[in-house]
Image 1 (cartoon, protein in one colour):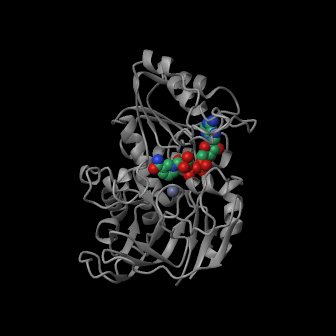
Image 2: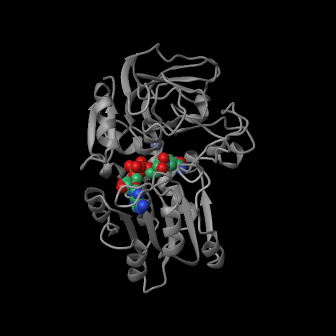
Amino acid sequence: MKAVVYNGPRDMQVKNVPDAKIERPTDVLVRITSTNICGSDLHMYEGRTDLEQGKVVGHENLGEVIEVGPAVDRIKVGDMVCLPFNIACGFCENCTKGLTGFCLTTNPDPKMAGAAYGYADMGPYNGGQAEYLRVPYGDFNCLVLPEDAREKEDDYVMLSDIFPTGWHSTELAGVQPGDSVVIYGAGPVGLMAAYSASIKGASKIMVVDRLPDRLRLAESIGAIAIDDSKSSPVEQVLAATQGKGADRGCECVGFQAHDTQGHEHPNMTLNNLVQSVKATGGIGVVGVFVPQDPGAPDQESKQGAINFDFGTFFFKGQSMGTGQANVKAYNRQLRDLIHVGKAKPSFIVSHHLPLDHATDAYQHFDARDEGWTKVILKTGK
Ligand code: NAD
Ligand code: ZN
């Protein structure tokens, strides 16, 4: 089958690889029709992980079930399904509590919890930027889509990751109707956080970034665009909230946060959040930060030991939630909002491209070239 394969830093190639197939009785085989490129893929693309060469990438997948293993009984051939990026068993201590981002079964590394398709450190599973995808524990890991699956495919594919992830950041922050919310990052995840806050009835939503096209998209859903290349984002948020700070804040950038001169500051958004959220306010962090590597020579850069202003966080009595989104906790409800026309997350989609164009698409998305907000790779018929 044709697939997007990691060939080394800044080198994704479309190659022929052995077909994905049913390997265990609980597997489901999906013919992929839509598969997105995600900001999380860029951690691997930019060479910040130890992803093995030859791995098929892609964790935002949607397609049609073409085969089911003998132990699968809920999912049927012909179902259109969206696959949460988390690969979860459904029966471990965490999964039974709904914490499927921290499944204790599917990641063979005992230091890690949680697994994903086509991802570094998240288990041995190939991704879905390919013609076919093997879905472990298929009965649990497939979200069945309604009859408008094809018509609303661009919306439903966002259920695999970024819509639930944006929603998760607002849950972690504790967003309630009437709250003011500041979101750092107007990438796909930040825009989905802003969209989620809007659905939840936030009274004021402020989105910080410096890329004009992304800030315009934030404005298109009623958020206030805060351009941090003009002046301090903290000052702008304080000015917009009568000096008090936002009730809630969401971190949707991660450890690749940088200043407007292009220098990396992995601590920048977290410290800005502590400053721009009110005392006792809540902060939800879904931007990815990596664990500390005790052997690394330079702990301050790109590693877990970032320079976080814990003192201000403590004295302001703020709370913070972090981690991979538990997609299954939200995706059925968000699917139903899409189905009845109350949510349309596809407003961020900028490109539909054939899988063959993946190498080029990665380059543009990684460069955050103007207008490259979200790419859907289309495969098959
Ligand atoms: P992206 O890289 O497209 O977007 C990040 C945005 O942040 C860019 O628009 C960039 O201009 C902006 N930015 C950079 N530095 C900034 C700063 N100092 N202040 C404000 N904005 C700044 O990525 P994305 O797809 O939106 O993903 C964002 C993060 O979310 C990534 O770290 C990704 O890995 C993570 N993520 C986490 C989960 C999860 O489950 N927790 C799921 C999906 C993605
Ligand atoms: Zn993703």
